[in-house]
Amino acid sequence: MRRLCIMILGCWLCMVPATSAQQYYVALGDSLAAGQTPNRMIDAGYADFIAQRLASQRQLTHFTKQLAFSGFTTAQVLERVQEPLAQPDLQKATLITISAGANDLLGLVSTDAATGEVRFDQLAADFALNEVRKNMQLILDELATRAPQATIYVMGYYFPYPYVHDVQKEGLMRQQDILNAILQQVAAANDAIFVDVATSFNKQAVTYLPNAADVHPNFEGYRVMANAFLRAYGAPELRSEELPQPNPLTFEEVLTQLTERVEQQSEPIAQQQATVERYAMPHGYYALQRLYAVAR
Image (cartoon, rainbow, N blue to C red):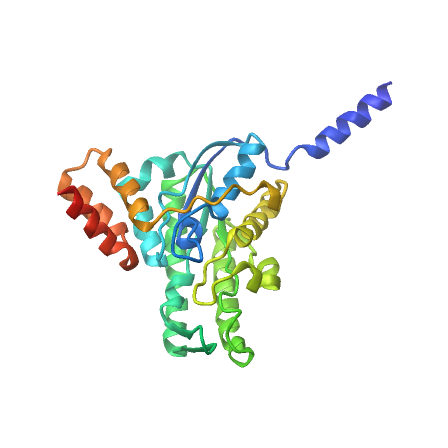
């Protein structure tokens, strides 16, 4: 009987996740952290799926991706971390994921979805990669002070151009490898954990990136990203059948939510508007203008 109890206890312990802490989870970063779809809308992304798994394991007390925004470069993520609006969440955070660095490079790449041709400036790319290294160090320095309780996971990147000609992939993949190496090195130097996304994602990148003219994944692609994190974290991976139904929001709707959140803060109206405008990227700025025009 005693042996049976020991065996049952042992099986139960095998089912308990390696990490059982109650997490206040904050997702920082760019469009991948925000959950941008291949059709330029916002929906559940890898951060939402991580939160879903943690909640199912009863390890989640709070989740927000309000500090992530499409288009953010590392410099803009750094600014976001320093914003007063971010401080309440950062002070409480026990778990942070960061997606930052790809937009520093993507603006330098010109692609033609119809022909599969791509162009980029190597000298500018080298400069951008150096900026990523410096800014990621500054971000982690800030978080060491502003989020002292948090364990930080730095998300790596997949190759976003599976549709380009094979002869042109080599140069682009080299830049992607350098970016991931920089993120991994900076993470290791600051006791953060690097999450390798590329190894699992790149094997079926065409499946996960259905729009040849867009670099953002579908739900399955975000699930692969979330599972890369969950493996590093020590929680069960998410199955396809566990994914929620799509519920995309337009950028206008996202900006409306952000405006409502900012208005809850005790700041003067002019400062509130300036805060929202700093968070709006060019693809959403005119939507923001329309939002204020309707409000007036």
